[in-house]
Amino acid sequence: MERIFVSYIDRGMIIAIDGPLASGKGTLARALAAHFSLPHLDTGSLYRAVAHNMMREGYKFNNTAAAADIARHLNINGIIDADLRTAEVGAGASVVAAMPEVRKALFDFQRKFAANPKGAVLDGRDIGTVICPDADFKFFITARPEIRAERRLKELHAAGDNITLEELTKQIEERDYRDANRADAPLKPTETSIILDTSDMGIDEVIQKAVGIIDGTNK
Ligand code: CDP
Image (cartoon, rainbow, N blue to C red; front, side, top):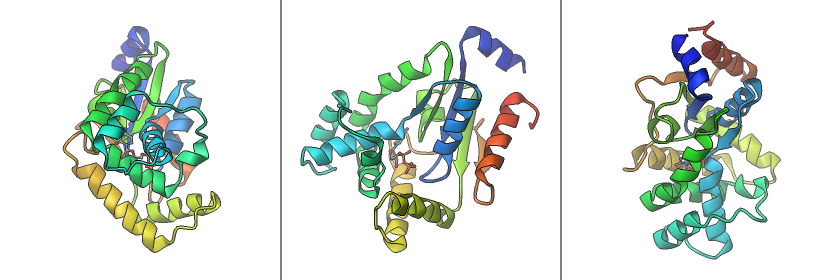
């Protein structure tokens, strides 16, 4: 408790949430931000915005020079959230996210966000390892691949994307592999990460558990 107490005085509380695709990390991040009145950054949307800009400007996702340039001058004008949530943009995001030049270009913005005196909640793949190694709480959210595929299929179908379960499962396998095996900032828990498998948990249960851990009643 002392650590939390001290950190509240020195600076706001920083909560880092990492995990693979459709593990529930975004939902948990939004809920914790609302509960503790902290600003929230979905860092995946930055990589998605780079991929979206590349599509808009007609580049292939593997064009490192173009991706780095776009990331350095990231233009989010005219992009609405729905544009970023498609399966194609997600797949492109994971390609550009493996490029160290792109990660470097997005680093400062994320660090500055985390340095907000009020504190912050950030979710992504490398928040606990690279962006906020000094976070007060590091959650690593997982779920079985078939559960994640079902969740993401529902979201994509609701958004009008007609991707099949078979194609999505293939994309998830590729994305999981790329995110966990890239040389720069691969997805992995840290030694102090709190690992939560949400496969058999409802959203409210996950939120309650995380809030309980933070409040120190559920350690
Ligand atoms: O919601 P979902 O898990 O599908 O994806 P996301 O969190 O929006 O992230 C999209 C892609 O961006 C991921 O597959 C990662 O390759 C990349 N990413 C990353 O490398 N580092 C982050 N901090 C956040 C996302």
